[in-house]
Image (cartoon, rainbow, N blue to C red; front, top):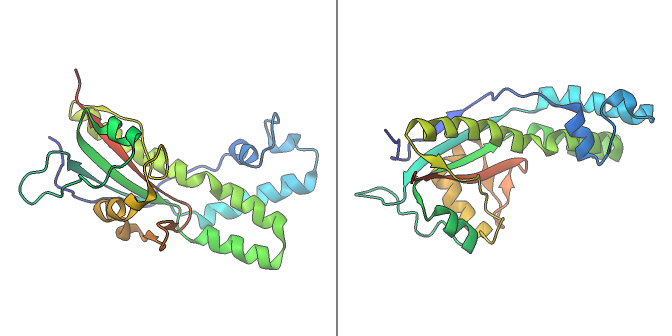
Length: 211
């Protein structure tokens, strides 16, 4: 049975692991495979401290809702949501879509701003890089839950697709966030449709008919 009535499912306290290697790659440190291999001890220490701090500042939350692309009765009409050739083509073979929003919360961003004012850029940069990929990490965890629902219902799935990519304009953000229930996890938009907290992800996953 497909849950297509727009019920918002909130996922709080998403478990996570901060991977030192991933942080190093975010910092454009190539080839090395561990913090111990970094020749600049102050840099390695800065990354370790940022990772330890990150565990207390990252609070992964997500929310998602599934809708029919052939609405009936008082179901929302998603006609105006998708713009751009790639996303429209992606949705062509779909019966349903799941809209999702997730975030790591505002605390890490706030601490980065404090460090920039207090300790200069080094500590702030390391912490920023710790948080830089964690919103996508949370989106991956939410994606896994949604995929299980899709498979259980006998459907295939599309790739996860976000506004701002492939000509899908950011002007779709207000409708997406509203239908997904972003307010339930504290995610809002600026006047230019940028999400607050910044380290947040919005996206859609289509439910494809199996041939």
